[in-house]
Length: 146
Image (cartoon, rainbow, N blue to C red; front, side, top):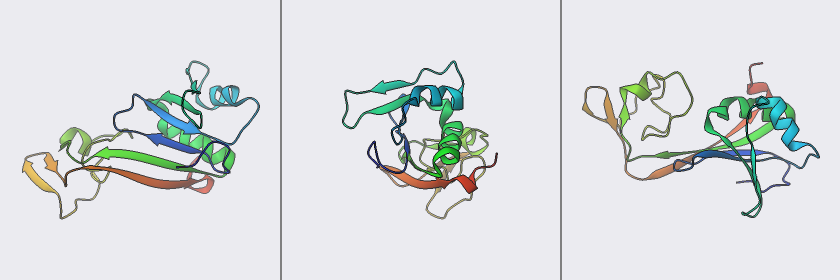
């Protein structure tokens, strides 16, 4: 994970965390930039109790935040944590949003590809290997559809 002050911003969605964590290169008006990118009613919180400090933002802003950071900075590191012990249900497999944290690690989310290591335990319910995993993506400005 990148530290604050690095050349590339990062966003992390932790499985057990209530909010997204993010950091970006220093800008004098970071809070105003976040409001401009995500809307004036968001409540970004600067958490200075951790080192390095980080912004904490509501999870529903994940996609818009990633797109805004990639567009502004050129690219962004994205870390998404998944629980492999949480079953993947039909609700995930037919989802349209982007907040998948279950055992499919996003592979089945919204009708993704079925993989051979997945076991269907009953209709519409898949289970995968046990544990937690974190996926790392680099999203570049050319990947963002604006």
